Amino acid sequence: MKKLLVVSLFVLCIVFALGKTYKVGTEATFPPFEYVENGEIVGFDVDLIKAIAEAEGFDVEFVDMSFDSLIPALVSGNIDIVIAAMTINEERAEVVDFSDPYWTANQSVVVKGGSGKGLTVLFGDNSIGAQTGTTGDLWIEEELQNTGILTGQVKRYESFVLAFTDLENENVDALVLDEPVAERYAKDRNVDIVGLILTNEEYGIAINKDNKALLESINNGLEKLEDSGELLEIVGKYF
Image (cartoon, rainbow, N blue to C red; front, side):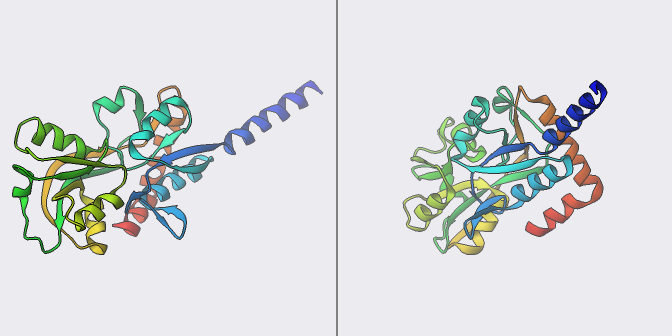
């Protein structure tokens, strides 16, 4: 009887582990990585974490929030995972753990279509926009503001939907953002990409430092997707 009880409890533990649902934080205005389509959050990152979850036997539930709220929400335990085209850097790695890198990107400079503006827009008394807390935001501060190259205003946005609207309405002279996202917006908005900033940043999936088991599971899932070729299929769907 005791043996049967122990076996039953073991089976229940396995079922519980396999059926666990993790809350995944993202910022769904960053196509093609994450965006809203027909009321649903979709994109490369969404398909990627879903595929990892399937490979590792857990479920995911998405939470859309501002980009600069993602790490605080992760640290506080309000969410379990962050996947949001987030660059791995030293500052973030001090407070969260990152998975193995799954993407490499650079930054693009975007201006209003037909404005005739070029890379000189980054100099002098011009206004440059970026999403708060992103690599573009940090690059503008470190390379343009702090060096005195840019003397104009830096406008920070919670989402790039607002940023691109401001750009088209000439409320800002240029935007700096991740290259693949800039290319996606350029297909649908009246904007031109006029420059590339070689940052060679790597994206990672962020996990609370207290959850090493989940980090290991996500890295295992990434490896499975790479070995099976499924990761390349997801890449091909969006790029």
